[in-house]
Image (spheres, rainbow, N blue to C red):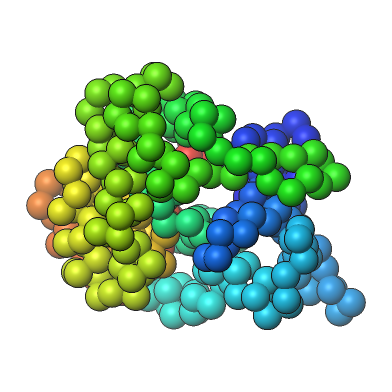
Length: 281
């Protein structure tokens, strides 16, 4: 599941985490801020379950829908695993992770887009640092919880108001600051509707994203996976994907050719390829 409730792991952006839970601030479609906490548990029959709470309280149906999207719980992973078992390359990769993987979704697509830009060509640690600085610069306190208040990711109009010059103050390069300022302005003005992109066909969503200055195929694929719910998005140029496939003798143009076998689950295949790198000897 990832995430969690511990004070030790809490961050301004991500909330906190351990192996059994996840907590963070989310911004709902109506602008309301809520602190969401999800904990892994077992039901009365002994089956694994999720215990969910939000502050302020939300209707049960709305809270359920939010968590289903957050962890992609309505994906038919039986179909994905059946496809993987029949694939000579992907089968062993998926089988090596018996606990499985879900495609985690960021509920705010603007946040996903900004995170993707911040993650371009830098380490995860560096991207996390820049994200944390941005949130501390612009973010808002969320409703207090037992673990204390945390910060919500800022709105597009708030980021746009700082402009490229203001964003450079958190340590961004001029190019990244300009890209984030441009993206924020596009979203704030309505020129880019990321919620509409979620409902659009994959090719159209891709065109909408790469039309933005500074947004290339890798960034667009990340946003499609992590915010638009596209389980078939495939960042073919991703260094991790290519490194994982190179171990199986797949390089160059063959990367896209092999990945065609995994439609419509290339996003999930990507997650397993990344996982194979972090858990290999």
